[in-house]
Image 1 (cartoon, rainbow, N blue to C red):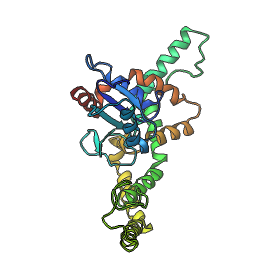
Image 2 (image 1 turned 90 degrees about the vertical axis):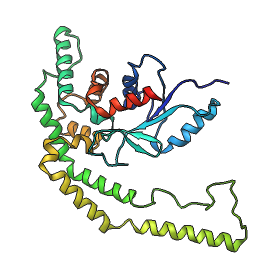
Image 3 (image 1 turned 30 degrees about the vertical axis):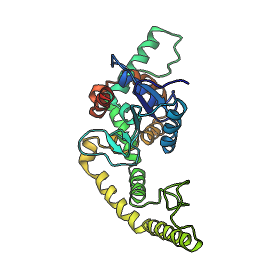
Image 4 (image 1 turned 180 degrees about the vertical axis):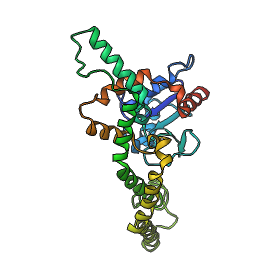
Length: 287
């Protein structure tokens, strides 16, 4: 039987995912005891995947980290740092794309590819030179402003999800899982426990109301409308990078393809300018 040795880091997606490739950048300067990075697919099956992975290789008490995008599962803190959700470490920004949507980085990529085209007439690069950092910054901000209402809605819906237990399905047992039998197995006692589960579930569902949604929505609309939110570029933290990316491509379809840019950016991003990514590097080093 194969044995898992050393540290293991689980991330979302496949080996082609941005998450997997960013983690490889984060650990590339670790001189000793480099971890094994394992893409685990979707975030909702992390725990099952991790258990299955270690069970397959007969590993116990394995040193491991689960790292994934924050998405809308937690609010970013005022202090730039990793967030913890159960046993998982989350990005401070909404997702990996948020770290790559950097005007200077996009500008440098644009210049590099245009210079390559000038040196190689056979290059497939179909754009002129970069329009400049200020224009690119405006491109990012305008795209973010166009999805301001949509992001407010997404955060308001996330609040409803966080404030209830509706993210959990109605359970089929009250004992903690299959194989753990209740003390009493009579129909009457079991039915009483089942009714209690149903009541708890109904109470949780009742917290999901239009009024609660509209209250949360008003809070986010106010927050995202503040001038400081935009001058401090907080939208790069709060708004989902995939949504910003899509809005950018929709607004300026004649500009560069950001998917191709991301491939280049992952190899050229300065990890040290993001405190939470440096923190992750230190966590990996210390486990």
